[in-house]
Image (tube, rainbow over all chains, first blue to last red; front, side, top):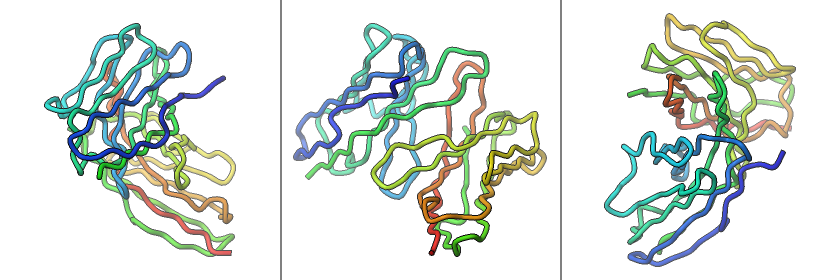
Length: 115
Length: 113
């Protein structure tokens, strides 16, 4: 089966600019996650969707970050305006709607550099 | 919320030796513990996982052990090979409807030829 797809793979922007990332989960996976992975650290959850509804966005900096999953499939994550500390890899993951379906499958990530 | 601590942060072993990475978690409700391998510039890939109703699980050269009482779990890699070199992350999930993972800080494993 095809894996989680993300684009772009790399993005370089200046601080205060805006940027958007796209994720297409594995077909049929109801749950979608966005993570931020700062260099040398483990992934940190930003937001979790179940179909097109938000399950948890408690760690999303809502003053500058937003995310949506309008049709319960693809998702976009936006940063506006970006700060230097937003430089990180943004990982998307999905998991199936199965009993005990905690296994998360990750995309290749988008590496963001804010200058 | 859940807190996962992982040790060591770096580990170097000779090819053929064993490697052990340890994690502790804080939430006694956690019941799912995956391990991910992340090679440089690539996505995290699940290599093995264990649920709280099992004490040990093996898959060829990889094994994971879980001690629920002490709230710690470990990854064991035997007969290490250079291609095992990567960053390994442990994670814990409290399951339920949220099914969220909290990750450790990672261990850089280097297998020396």
